[in-house]
Amino acid sequence: MYILSMPRAEAVVLAGFERYLSTMIILLILLSAATLVITLDEHFKEQDFNKRDLRSFSSLPAKKCYQYAGMFFFTFSVIGVNSEIGGMHFNDRLNEHALPQLLKQVTPEINQLNDQRILLVDADQDDVNSYYADFVARYYFFTENADAKEAFNVSPDQFKDINSQYEYMVMPKPHQTYQKLAQKTYRENITTGTYQVSENDLKRKTLP
Image (cartoon, rainbow, N blue to C red; front, side, top):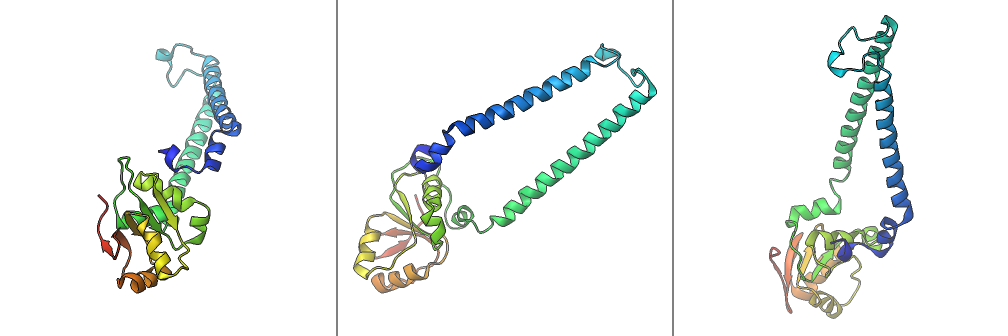
């Protein structure tokens, strides 16, 4: 799927040396943490794990230090987990009107590779110019023949030619220019949704 939908620039970044270097750094941090835990365990007074209890400390200060350290790290972990959960909820609210979420409201995701020609009409110029909308369309509809367009400053005949290149049109949010051209060209008052493209009209129809 990534071969079909991922922009070349993004693929180059993912296949770059920096990504693998970052992976090695994370792996080394994990190994260092494991080594630290093993070293701490080897310095316990009682080496037999089955014999360890509340009295298995070399001194009372050592026991208190262990308890305080354990409480500190436990509290820090709870705060960290709570912060992460809060961040996830924040991202969900932030992306509530993102393109993938809008697509879910008009049509289900396709999970089987196909060759359907799909036009995604997106009113967000930045999403189209950055190829983000193209990536989302190809991944969401699982086809390499999905394109996203925003600019439709064309004549009715050119508008019809553009649509004729595709089998389906998907409009997740209102696009004034496209809707006005559709009304002028096909005499259709379209709204958000999925449409099957024919020579003379746009017929509302769910994707197969």
